[in-house]
Length: 337
Image 1 (cartoon, rainbow, N blue to C red):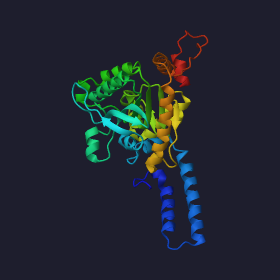
Image 2: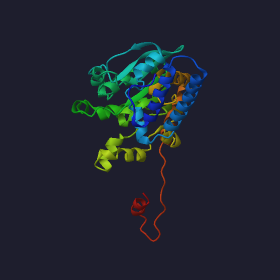
Image 3: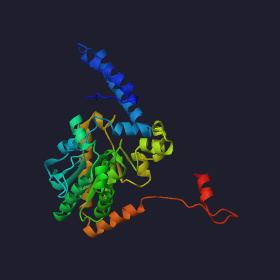
């Protein structure tokens, strides 16, 4: 079923879908009508492919934020079985922005950790649109340590604009807790799979993003900062968000090319928001294969691979010394940039 909410660049698709709906609702079954329906469906598929394969970075952000895009709770219903939610961080409280608990992926028991936005206004207000507090990251880490104890693979679904930046969160150690999670996740003795299913914003995403295998859904993004935040810092105006989005290189294609992620998981034609079930089928198949492959490694080898993986991220170039200069390359580097 087509989504109710439309993005600006989806207008041609909307018009063609309306035409198709009229043809399908027409009485009778004349050969001419059936032929028009067939041709319209072919044209609709072609148009979706053409538009969604050439999305600009800012348009990718719009798709990743689509209100009808599947959330962690949707995948829990469509991908996993027998989910038993575990609450609380044993220190302050329970953060609804992060879901944790035992689940089954076919016949394999796993620990699920996922950031959750919520569908209704009430749910979004409770989760702050999936912006976790320190207690959320503590809850996630406790569940991961429990998973290591029982030798269960961990599956993390990332979907957040960033960690909550409020005063209370900072007073309770937001930055410290995220940094602590990074260190502890790097040495948890069980396979960890991280999937960016929508937004992957800043340290809020990285707080549950250290794993043995990092993948992104095709129309998601993973970035140190939002395009609006970047534009506000560099150009003092969020209206340059599309320019910032191009500069940040945060789409799945960019990050695969740069070696930050391991895989791009393809979405159904027109994006995950158009077909939750098909997205779940694709995602489930990949998760089962990835978990099976990682489970074959001895723990010491797994931890070594994880360490090496993150040490390799980041490529830079050094400029040669300036001829006749004092060896300081800062001016030439600025000119090159």
